[in-house]
Amino acid sequence: MIYRLLLFFILGSPLPEFSTFTAPDITNNTILECSYQYIEIRDTITRRSEEDLMVLRIGKTYSVFYSHYRYFADSLLQTKEGKKVWENLMETAITNGNISSRPGSRTTDDYLFKNDPAGQLTTLTRLLVTEVKFSEPYESQNWQLYDSSKMIQGYTCHCARTSFRGRQYEAWYTPEIPVPEGPWKFCGLPGLILEIYDTTHDYQYTLVGLKTENIAPLEELDFIRNRRSAKTTRRKFLQRNAEIYFNSSSDQVNAMVGIDLGTSSKPKPRKAYDFIERDYK
Image 1 (cartoon, rainbow, N blue to C red):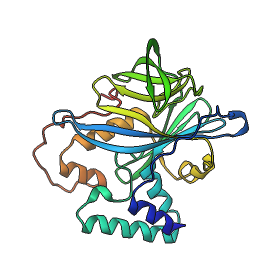
Image 2 (image 1 turned 90 degrees about the horizontal axis):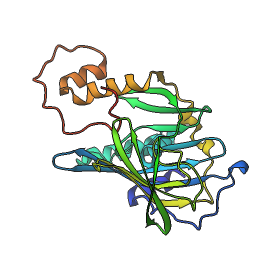
Image 3 (image 1 turned 180 degrees about the vertical axis):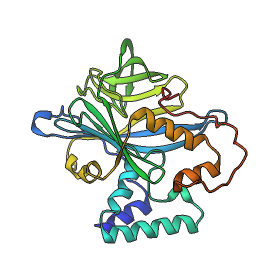
């Protein structure tokens, strides 16, 4: 199995699948799996971007959203054989000077457990080398619905807009898939969100695959849910992450090892970038 995964990684991810949609019977544990292309602008001046393949699995009582590449790497590390594969992939990436090909997420380490536990959105992520966990209320955004429509992947979609944590968003959802879910923390529309982006197009999710059959159960992610993590709050996590991300290199090293090494450097100019959630300031 591990060698099949290795071949899968080397040859590249398979194209996301589309199946004829049949409304999932959530009461009977049917799971819907959505794949989204995620584009994140890392420099708002040059418009340099990073891409990821995100997965949304929708189950009976809760959903999970995560990076396909992050999950692939975490899955490898669950077995002795998989760890060897992970080490070989990492060594190859370093030797070839192509760090972006190393096993792991292209953009985010976040796993979002939506409505798990009930009424809560639980995030498991990483702060440098520390696994952390925090929860927040799982609530719908305040959506405004509009008459505009367009086709996405063969589905008729309608426009909705919202303001969420410092950004304005435009979403396209389809009532043809009557599931009030969407990528990342978005939810609450009368249909699945197939595309959403902020009005400056710094963050964008677009549906590229949809599966209703032969999907692994959500319990497959229990090893992520049950991992030992330091508890924090969303705002504290974002504030600490901002300190690390926008600080000088020496500060990042000090923060990583937890010791003041006595090194110093001139502060770098603030990067032309900000997190998707801006309400941490």
